[in-house]
Length: 321
Image (cartoon, rainbow, N blue to C red; front, side):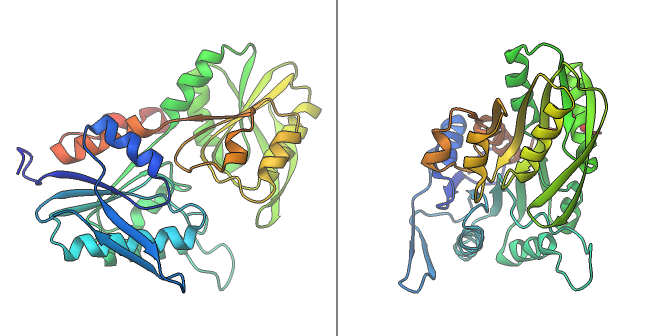
């Protein structure tokens, strides 16, 4: 047992993003825990923890990205296995929290899936959640256990700053992202513009007009995730049509489903900067327009502070307030 009183620090990974888990382990300076995870012929998931976890402080790294249903179920099964093996505390490290877009009832007879996932995690035996850039901050309130909500902003801003782009302006792709974009603009000491869009059906959006002057400026769109890249393409066309000299984008989570990769490759956008919260397919990773930054040190530092019972608050970005 260590001085924190939480037992040994152990880190395990599901199959969603093992490279990120390995990088986190390198930062924390522990070996990745041994597990057996495989599928039965009917696609049911089998998990066996191959280390003694009794009395340990356990962290399970598993984003619930594509295939979302499989990765979520795998996470729940791993947590259940650890709970039944007498782990002292189990923290679900979810770099990308899936099902977060349905966070309220915006029309009749629809679910609130982000709350459902929170309930499932608690029921499985999760004691704490560590995540990055939730789609909506209020999702923290769906849990009755501690949630440490980190932001990839510092990692992304450091990279943008090093680009030394002239006449930079930060763009919010919609009204809901203004708080995020304002924080970026403040940190980069630049101005802000907003794209007013209307979404009629899921995964499809139409950019309407731009609030702010982008003429002759380098536009940098900031968002929490890019899914099919339809919104991004509409935004890029709107910005160039309004006189922007070039367009870049950044996001915390590169979902990049369906035609996203092809759209980015064939579009006039100069670059898309993201993090490794979600692993990219080989085709997307080889796209020269996509730059991936690591959040392993951010998550690793949070894991160490949680384990040692020291403050995690300094890892949160105060400009988001």
